[in-house]
Image (cartoon, rainbow, N blue to C red; front, side, top):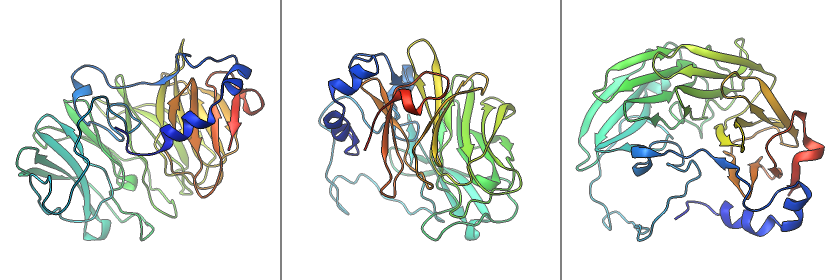
Length: 311
């Protein structure tokens, strides 16, 4: 089951000629790194275990109404645009109250919707947001031990499954004219996020320790706006952290933060999360901008050598 049509679009547009021109075959081992082990049973991050909004299997419920296929329904205080995530009997969701001055992580029991806990994150001030955005738009992520969330200006936070705030990392005052939105991504022992904005702290992409919240590495970025979520891909003989944002797509070394390659062609305001298939990374700009099909790898600006097509 898929939640969007990009898979069909990709299958139609990627021809054998485009792949062959880059020295690729349909079986090229380029893939978004999935969640394996116990975590693969649950919806533990933005766009699920595959990271692409797709899961294996059949016979999924696909029809709902106020009563049809509804096991329980409970009100959620505040306002937030984050997606819920699930691990065993826990459903996690973020919300913002008091006009964004107070942000919280909520945990519900999946069997009956009972609120298990509501933990507030230390905060000061209110980040400006567009009226269609919220102060709790980033989807949390969990490894089954802790649940992590980004609250924009209010920073990153980690909670244990009993609701205790394990750590909180302030990341600087953000000034993105639509507010914050991108979700954090787990990889091995670390958490990735990028924030492109015009505030005094500057745009950055960074890795934080999942255990302590300490900064492992942090790299400055020149982009002024962006609301996307990064992805981590297996590029065959190495992994790459891919960030699709203003004007360019970037790849970083997830271990060190070193910039590996860039591709020009994005528009100014980029929101969509990249997807992976057919040996390529697909990055959509949005706002009638192009979709770029990129072969990973290479060094420096690879626009002229690693773009299979732009549509």
